[in-house]
Length: 345
Ligand code: TYM
Image (tube, rainbow, N blue to C red; front, side):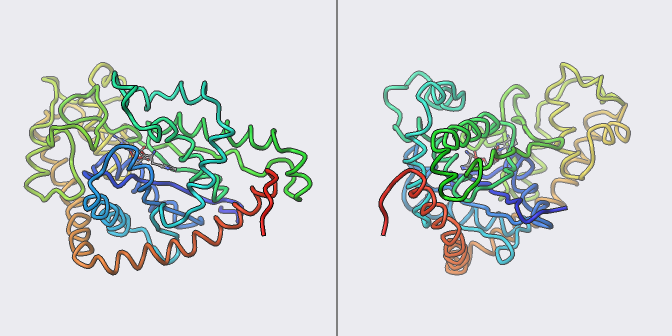
């Protein structure tokens, strides 16, 4: 299965309100991948500050994402778990890649357009160059595969473009340094399964997101059983019973979303869920979804809370992870300096 050359990298921003979308689209997949691959999972605090963060909250959220990784089942001993700012190579390579990426490429990023909205003149420069730092995160470890939700697809395409341009721009120096055709791999996104884009529980046209003002739009990983039950019961649906086949889900985004969530939480497909629930009213389906959600998420929330009670242990995990990440990162920075032509001692 795994070859030594395969390396997984992914990151999650410590911006609070970790939700079911983050879990199903990303963290749950991180856990599955650790079985047979070398994995590096990062709490991307440098990305978080592209929008102002309260310093105490940033610290708390950094520990909370780490706690979520571990509570969901990531083993920080056999994988690397750390926060980005502890490994200076991210910022260093980020700068070099800022000089490789083109303005036109970044101007096309839809996430920037969404986040900046009409206030483009007033957002941080960091928000604009966010995707080059993301490319640096991945390429610093020369990662071959990146598990993410659908919303990160464009950023991963940009990462490939940046890697390709770096490889082309410095081709003779790369060869001279003994690195064959391309120093950086053309990283593959891993976007798969029934919940790559979990939608808001209140509006099937909007993504479930940390920043949505209504807490009823999302299930947070720290929600207790009552909160989960309440949110699922109030989730928007339509008056029709569930169909027996996928075809019947067309034009029913809220129903499709809930079926996708059910399928992802129970490790099956939407088709299989519809085979079981076809013809059922939402009241019955929601009752089953509440039971499933509480049984899967309840223990995660409880374990996160337990881990958060001991911040020193979380910090020790991040320190150990950062030390191991630095070994890989420092080598890449040395190589990149040689390739680009920087004198180093
Ligand atoms: P972030 O912190 O917004 O989200 C973390 C992960 O959760 C996924 N996700 C979703 N998946 C399905 N449905 C949703 N509604 C949903 N909302 C979020 C995201 O796709 C992501 O995988 N830019 C990244 C963080 C990052 C990163 C990286 C990721 C920085 N450097 C390098 C991979 C590799 C982000 O903002 O994720």
